[in-house]
Amino acid sequence: MTRILHVLDHSLPLHSGYTFRTRAILRAQMAQGWDVRSITGRRHGADAGAVTEPDVETIDGLIFHRTPGEVASGNALIREWRDIGALAESMEALVHRWKPHLIHVHSPVLNALAAQRVARRHNIPLVYEIRAFWEDAAVGNGTGTEGSPRYWLTRQLETHAVRAADAVAVICEGLKGDLIARGISADKIIVSPNGVDMEMFGTPVAPDPALRTRLGLDGAEVIGFIGSFYDYEGLDDLIAAMPALATRRPLAKLLLVGGGPREEALRNQVAYSPVADRVVFAGRVAHGQVENYYSLIDILAYPRKSMRLTDLVTPLKPLEAMAQGKLVAASSVGGHCELIEDGVTGTLFAPNNPAAIAQALAKLFEARPAWDARRAVARRFVETERNWSSNILRYEPVYRRLLNGARRARAA
Image (cartoon, rainbow, N blue to C red):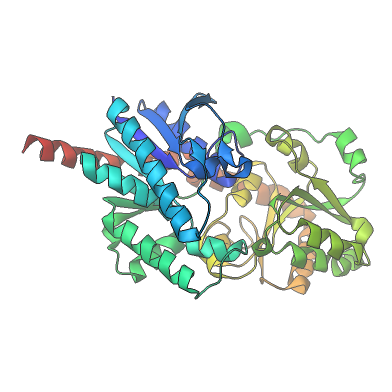
């Protein structure tokens, strides 16, 4: 049986788009009959200060090996170099015990640098999967600055890691195009787009009347956002659009589910809004309860701001909303344009533009007779083109080529 080792930044039981994509990949590969395990670095336990889980955890039927110890402290470069070393050491021990046939390492680039040390030492083929460029993610979450020395260095490390890998997977065409512009051969890159586990998201639940009442949404036309409150998500623009939308749609209310770095600023913005009573903060909810909040929303809105991160990377949330049979409205940044066909699977509006958001949402509410057809088309798109049960097949020819090459090398 083919043994695949996945190297991860973090995993279940943490909940994020990163961990949900990982779970989908691992479960689909196990369904193919492969023997699959994963290992996480020290960053998995960063919020707690140290990894306190057992050395090995089985969660949702998936096996995760942990790198023990606290996240290194001190100068950023020294800290990250130590974390790379700790992950490489843990991988080395696991490779000796379990002897994987192939290593599939997932971004950020720190993981790739650690995995390459071990893969070269043991002559194991290595696939590097990029879900976002780390330097752009840092700009998006406010911890980095585009054009800074650190940004430049991280970009050089990313390019080095891609060149050193035997094959590269990316989640969208935007990332592939950027790598090709750096001189990476297109033949080395596969696109494995974000998908949806239809077993989890494919069966919408009925609206919960008690929850609707508790949130103050009885009789409302509900626009919603479910996710993390980062600046690049553009939630300040969505809130700023509410006064104009309320003028045209007196029953409109905005439901914000989640939390994050921008939560306090967004709450302050709402406090000074003339339509503060139309914005509801639900807070963070357990993943198992998310479907209940989806069920109360008429239109899911994703007003991402225009920047390198959002132009290059496709998000997961709009696909989950489509799978739930919900209408989707989103800014026309590059990542959204790869997922949404305007007027067919969703509605696109200009980014960084509250007036455009209000106009698009008002027109959608005015077109209610066409909603059922729109939702059916969007769901069919997810089922046929963004379903993990079929997406996983994109890895198989790459794995087979690398494994066959490794077998020939050993026989020579």
